[in-house]
Length: 120
Image 1 (cartoon, helix red, strand yellow):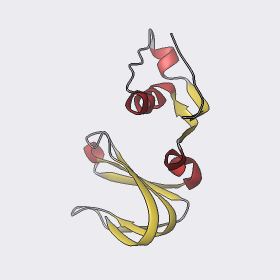
Image 2: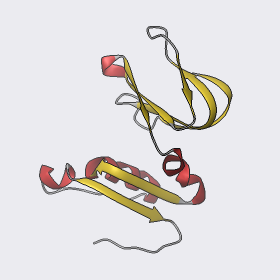
Image 3: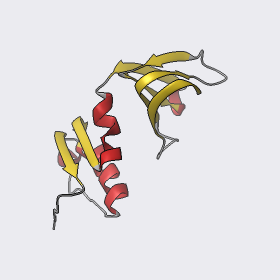
């Protein structure tokens, strides 16, 4: 990755699975020794999957991805199991699913650290 004067976010908590780069402003070049570098601009996201040595580029709401800076987590049309991983990291909690149907449900949700919530 090469930064070209910008505001961006990197999600590399599970680098063996995927690394995600989201650009809020400016430009970022992404790639590795086997892949040609691609330049991302504001509102673009690159998802690198090491097992496939492939980068997928798409448009996204960068503000939603960067919302964690203001204490918010925003999820749009994500698998519940992927949301659970992020919530587990953020709140130092464990989330378990009784079946795959629930884990694979697509959800849209947002969480604000100022709000108190409790799940049992």
